Image 1 (spheres, rainbow, N blue to C red):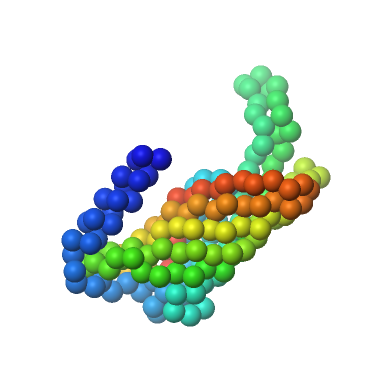
Image 2: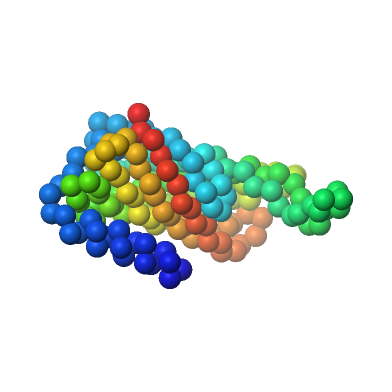
Length: 169
């Protein structure tokens, strides 16, 4: 957590030192992005801007629960799970620089997990940082934390975290 705070603080300080605004095409001419997010769960992700600062964020993830040793012995449930999520995001700028822009976002949405005869449904609230660049102007790097309140099959709270990249078209 200390490293994450240091990286975010350093990014904000570097971007704040430059006063000239940079031009990025993400959300301003290039509205649709696809990429990958590593974390809980690793996912293929997309984002579609529907207006200035508003976007739909979605993902298709996969997860293997349990473990197996090199002799074929498996512990735990050990099944493959797929997950779908969709969130509506509100995004606003934090720092605009000549080479990069740092935005933040907050949203509301849901997640569905399916696999091994089980299913789970959750409401989620993602909060994150989005870094876009002047060159290449089609690239977005993001960090996101999303508290998720599972309502099916039982009530419990989970915390999802992602580090990802999207390429905009």
